[in-house]
View 1 (cartoon, rainbow, N blue to C red):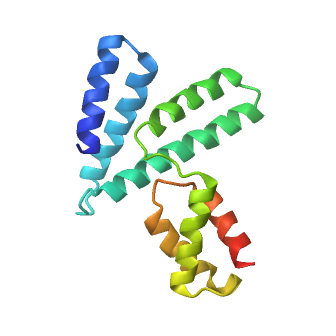
View 2: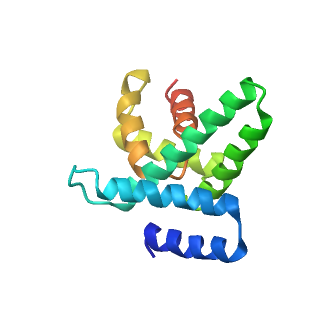
Amino acid sequence: MTLNERITDALKEAMKNKDEARKRTIRAIKSQILLMQTDGTGQEITPERELKMLQTMVKQREDSASSYDAGNRKDLAEIEREEIAILKEFLPQQLKEPELEEILKSIIAELGAQGAKDMGRVMGEASKRLLGKADGKIISTMVKALLA
């Protein structure tokens, strides 16, 4: 089932349940998919592009929630966190640290990476393989530690 189909089904369900937060968030995802389809680049909408789009939406909301917290607007921060939880339902299950570490060790071994100078190569490969399965900051921190 494609993301668009999952989104359509989730929107129908949210409308039946009169869940305003889910409707608002799912409509935002649908809007982003529509923008990707009509962006004029001619790029095919692949599952990888969909995952990146969802990750971007989560990141934007995390940044907004942090800003609202800093501005002492807990009510608005809570709305953002609500949307983050809904968005994460459409992302793959996040890897636990031990699993992530094992995958990164195998990537480092495959590439023959020796130190910090090889971090770019390792991060490039890790980003491809772990798309949507782990946060980029966590991957980066762990790669630095493993290459040190």
